[in-house]
Image (cartoon, rainbow, N blue to C red; front, side, top):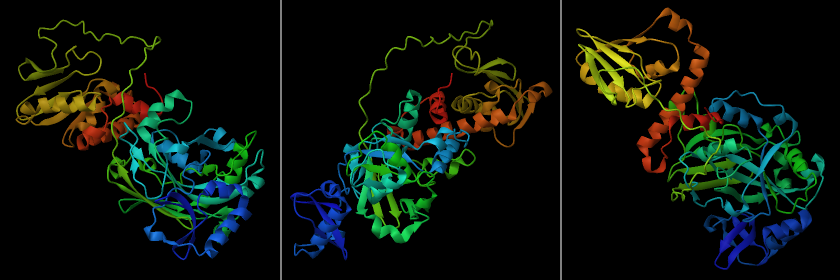
Length: 477
């Protein structure tokens, strides 16, 4: 491992819960470059030395290689990607490319943190996440390796936490050029570099079968085993070495063990079960059999400096929303009494296209004519009508036509309200399609609104279409 001292970082070897220091001024990457034999020799010399040891419990551990030459994070567990797609409302089916070549991206070596260091939330992120992975570290360099040769070039393993800003990550997805600010906030390595010989008892059919568990504030979020990998470390290292010189100390992350991150637990069918994104003060613990444990506290960060968007010459100007119908009353936002016991709900532009509705009150009961597409507007409308519906309870709602303009807000109505639709309207509703985008907005908009209410200073205000686009990983017209 590497640990901090008053004189700077120093490399050591564990022996009976004490750190035996290696010679001063030698980095772990340098020792790794000597190969397995050189690393073992340095370790044996440290254990036999009379140098003063340090209690492991009192040491401040750094990442084993605080500044590795490069970091590649791979996606070896395809179920992780399937789970993420399901959580964001996409089919679980993966394209052929996922089965033909292993995926990886380059992470940022300068944001590596130690196993017990605090981790700052990525600036501007409200959806901060962790990912439990393990990492393989390259010993002697190599190029154009076979999978078998690649396995032999692994000099050790460690825990890897791929901290992720999900909202920034999804916001960047339309750029289609790889990971950026959603992924370079921090990555944890540690607590130790464990050599392959120590892990031989955990090998099953040539793969490491290590039990893992991820906790947030003491609550287990996910658990699993590392032998569920679809692509092995040998596969991904071989692929990465094609025409490229791998260097001693290069790090290869395994990708997330399925279930061991927050986003996979975002359920369209049970949004209340989502444990919530990470917040200031949350404690994340990752435990991997044979590799140890990391324990880190999440901290708030300052807001980022804003950037002015560039002009998009291809963007169409918004179509003006104008209601050409004559009216005896001004089209102002709110509830208007247009007749005895009859009210209309309008927006300032007349609600053309999506946000007009009506209320008819009788003796002891009221009839609502349409709800709205927008859930916050529906809540505002129902609140404005309460002066009437408290005296004449809302018992019926009629759907005048089948598209989402006047049906989506139905989910805001109480169970006591009977919804009525003309036969033609009911027949034209595509229930499968309607349920898909209904659930998508329920999970995205309602959860985001809840976060805004709980922590408005750390949750950016985003309109519902932006949120839906982010979660669906595509732009919506």
